[in-house]
Length: 280
Image (tube, rainbow, N blue to C red; front, side, top):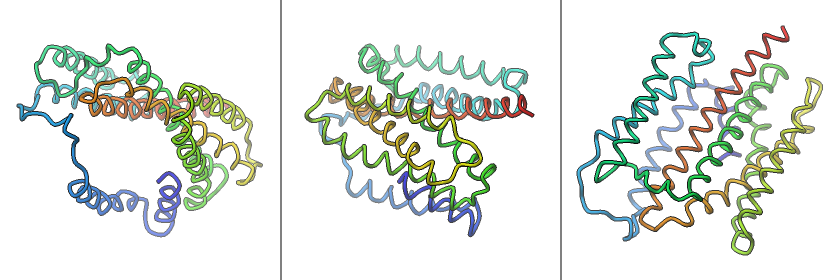
């Protein structure tokens, strides 16, 4: 998906409209739902008796996360906390998420079991996933902007250049997925972060005279490093949880990665806008 997606997205944008990157998800989403209903089933150890849905907890969570996304998405446009409505939205985020945490810890059938955060290994994994998500999405946001607004690439060429990140991630995922059976996953996690750091340091020196192929190696290395760290991290994070908590733990893990991605995008767009003003 990280290889094919940017290429198809760029081709659709150039030949039809950027709106097609949303329309194309409709048939794919429908197919996914049908295949899930046909082939996926819960193992016996996570099947639960029918209980009433925790609507109150779910409402607090939805309002809190929705408000947080609005704050992160619109912050740069309205100069962050110089905007009164953004301050109010931030307050709503804090109050809703605080109420969500208190409610989930007190209710008998929580929509999200936060008690598993007592596992230090799991909690650290969530923090690490958030930082990796911020790095990954921050890079993926900046590079197409650089290609198209400064180097003059078309959306299709930008997609081709961005696909190299997916190539590195794919190679690493296959290799690390096999090797973690024989070696400590922490070695791969640390190595992936090191590779990611070195590759990003190399990318910091690019300029407008650089060619597409000169950027391929560091971008592939970035994808390789992210995947090398992320694959063992996901195993290490949920590996010590009880079977019945696996689904809950995986959900929290992916949530923190996506929240980290939103934070990373907000940080990079803010830095880009403010540094552009400084240079101008």
